[in-house]
Length: 253
Image 1 (cartoon, rainbow, N blue to C red):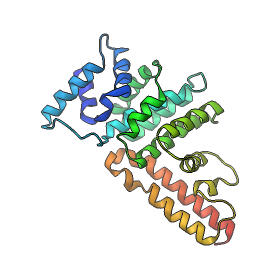
Image 2: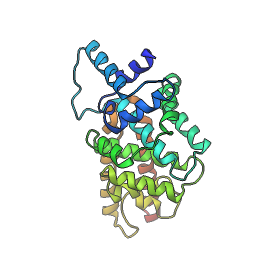
Image 3: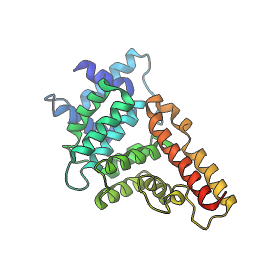
Image 4: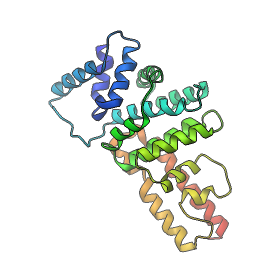
């Protein structure tokens, strides 16, 4: 068990505490009797001492912080329609395997199966996340959540509503929320929604919107989280490029 918690300690900062830390403690306690958030924080202190650092800084988001935030928020969305779909579980496992490799993904998914058993306040979790995580990383969280919801072939209204609430709690505005949501729907005006413009936009407005979106969603904004998170960032970036190409074709640009 020590190696498992030291794996956590090596990658976590702000998520050791607060509601996310409580969820992690509950998850580990579900398969290790008597384990709690207090044990996690003790492991963190030991890890930081061995690494020669007693503090990471309140606003510093580690790769593991993003990972645990994903797990907790995914558990909320996956239960939004009142059931846990196997395809959604498989999507979570596949995404984590693609990002982190099989061994780390197996450890993360073991936690996830414990987290989904706990009732968690989306608002409290998101308050913790937004206090420590930059906007670009929060946008990436939202992108991943829509991917989970769509994993079983369609997105239910309850899932959409849960993700919308999470977006609000994360201080992601309606334009950004609508843009990311449109990346997962096949509708005639999706390309315009992704670029945050209307069909009446002029050529100059289309180009300006594209430059703005490239800047907002460029994968370089997530480099600090580690290369394991760049795949999702590149997928989002590719959606922007495809939307721009589609609009250019429609407008004869």
